[in-house]
Length: 419
Picture 1 (cartoon, rainbow, N blue to C red):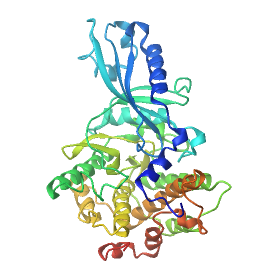
Picture 2 (picture 1 turned 60 degrees about the horizontal axis):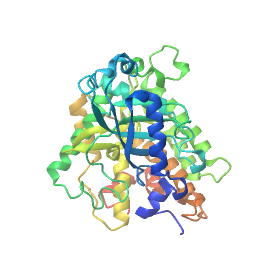
Picture 3 (picture 1 turned 135 degrees about the horizontal axis):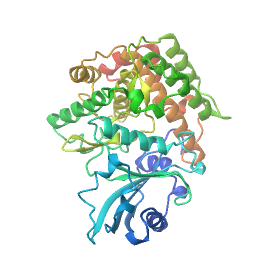
Picture 4 (picture 1 turned 45 degrees about the horizontal axis):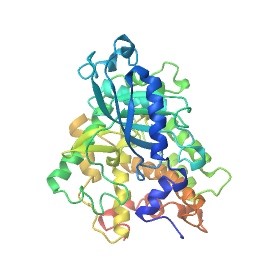
């Protein structure tokens, strides 16, 4: 296979190489042993229906499973959860001799042998983010049950959360090709768009976020209130470190490096304090029920920053799929998640006027370029693609990044950019 990967099967292979996928029966036994140690032998936990999705993303491994255990507990059970979360279970768990079934998800840090997309996976931090978002906002998140820092049970750290039913806009093949979302009527898609933007407004409205999410702060803040400008500078510096890790001893990307130069020369003027940013703010990370968010997932990229950082990511990640659709000769969803519509809805919900979106969408495209450079490098390493003569061709959306740096991308959107 030459060039970038472009098929559903290939995308699944890059996300979860066949030789790195977990055996469901082995995982079932491991989880049952772990639950026995966690709950106590008297709970007699059993694990069943273990599923290892092949298309569950390209960062953390995901395991779906059902667990059943006895609810005959007293004070021993109450010590397993802090007071804040124990109330979630009061109605379900009693001192009667009963068995309760729980549909759960385990998110597991990938092994280094799988050439992970990111240099580190602080699942404990993700676990904290989910709980804090659930406690301090109306953003729907799954109940986070346990975090296991040891690798003894599953070979890596992991956390367990509830499984939420609903529909997720697929990445492979992209949701704007042919999916439940593309087949929906315009009213339902508009509801999904508006309620997705509402998630960002609710998240950014969390009061005193630096207190609620103090574990995300760098030491240099030293009690000072982090400004949006300083948070953005910290974020860009972290992206530079990430890029340095991605290239390692391998080829460099002149396009990504030119993008960093563009970022510095077009620095915006974000005002006010930093807000909590989701980081991976896209509809593919939301479970929907009746076209409204039922659970917001994937918090590994959470950080502080300007509000526009999340908005730029949500807008551009849809454009990424739209450009792919145009190259494939498909109509896509040109009336969906348009930049002006997203900005208008966000302003209505938050009273904040987003500014300088050219910068933030370009920064989103640059961040995504680093991720795609890593993902395509993995494809080469796994034998799914051949190394291109020009390393910049590892960036699937190279043309879009070049157009953004040239200042011609958004005028090209209306003219059918990518055709």
